[in-house]
Image (cartoon, helix red, strand yellow):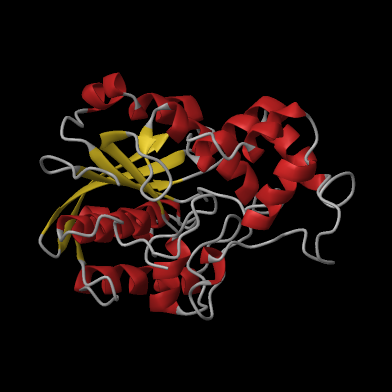
Length: 311
């Protein structure tokens, strides 16, 4: 069980990339909640994973002014499908995965898994090679056509499905898991339902598509390559709904006119995605303050698969 935070923790929403650059940085939204209202404070661009990781440390938090701690919603998976991990422990290549079979080891499963993956794969390209070998050189006996397995949480919301964390191409969600989780574990961040760490630093898996889909259905609000009037209208509709509290979270987003324009003007949707993660983190914080030790996460959560907030 993760201890309750003391004091008014800062809320963070992170739009993540496994290989950020100055042109395509991580986007970090910062905000605070008072009752049912979430006030956006700042939107910040972080050009490297190292810069984000440095913020997670006690010294980095102090330098950033996060003295009362943070609750962060992160747009990347915190776990891998259980059948894949079981096959990795039983048949995976190399000695690094033997530790996954040790039933006496009380280290959290998510820690043992990411440490073993880091030791065997070294980098995200190595992780992609491991996935490519799934069902070819190891993991024999998996169901036909099941290379890109999904977690239970990925399909927990009817009509919506998040990308499999075994996907390492196109939308490289697997690489995001590999790069993101190892840094949360290294900084000893608390991940409710997965691991207990520093009580003032809490991170939860978020997915902007859940909240956006609730409001827009299948309408597209962002594109990496094409800015269109239709997507701009969708972004404005999404912002309107968040400001008016027209979601099942029951929270209202408070923006200045300049912030509203700034969110709408981003055709890639990174800023808006960070804010959607912020809103999901605010909902989890509210649930926790109301006495929910699981921060709103499902009691069906698998400690190696993780769970998406609000799913």
